[in-house]
Length: 308
Image (cartoon, rainbow, N blue to C red; front, side):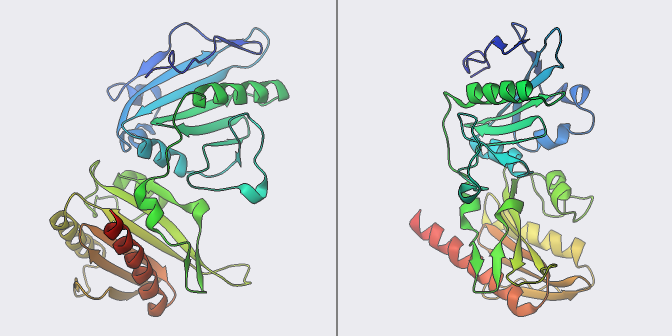
């Protein structure tokens, strides 16, 4: 599929695009974007098509179409930032009561920038200067990009995370990110400049905070990470590597039955090996909550495995 098959219009409002896009691949992506190329390469990037919509008396509108390996990769790119207002395919805002930050969120708009995912395409449409006319044009382009593409669900790994842990913890869906690369992980939650979880493009991972349900203006949060590897042996090796690098002075406790818990300066850390998955909780205020977060996610994971 390419932009031509997406029926990207030649003209939108007073803006016009050239007949052919600039095509960016893994070899020249760093020439196109300074420093951000690793982000897209970390999501099994195929190529990028760039269109500049120009007008004689208006600032330009930039269209970037990122063609990824799968719809999961396109979801992952959108999931790195849930900021902006969700919009429907016809460009109208979605009511606040219907906002969702997972499968039903296909496009987000704010400050002249529209980001969307549809099938295996992640798109960015950006007006250099936001005006009522440019906003209308940007949303029209978004509609054209998503019009004839599929609306796939979010990655299976994302569906595992329970929305609530007992009566105390709730998942912050608007902070949930799907990724494969340790460089992407570090942009979300920094662990190390090295790849201490042995992540590569064959891995799948989701990270999100659980927030304590309270009336406090500064609620407690615990970060939860779930990683899926190709097989149980790779998961075990990765967890060993993680412990040796992140907890070098603490005794290793990788067991089948129980989560391993460690008291650190920023709270409790817990991890557990779950077949080809590893689950890790960071910055938990108490060990009981850390254990509960691991157990509830393990329950959902085993349920999913049993259904497949």
